Length: 86
Image (tube, rainbow, N blue to C red; front, top):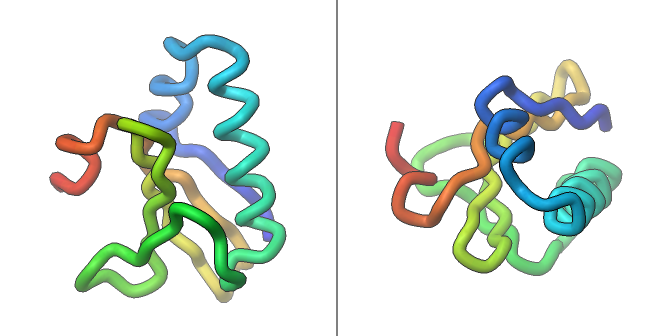
């Protein structure tokens, strides 16, 4: 499955140090390779279909899976308090 980042997610990654960015990117690529397998720290977002979050300490990466287009789009990488607000 193809992994994509929104502009907001890319902006969040730009301000992080390289080691953290590499870890987040590697983890999300592993999830994209098998999006419906069981992954540590991944939980579905309540009330939304094919929207999940992956925990990275105090950060959350929120992503959507488009089964038809075979894409996984990371929509946000932010702190826990802001991750679930629309």
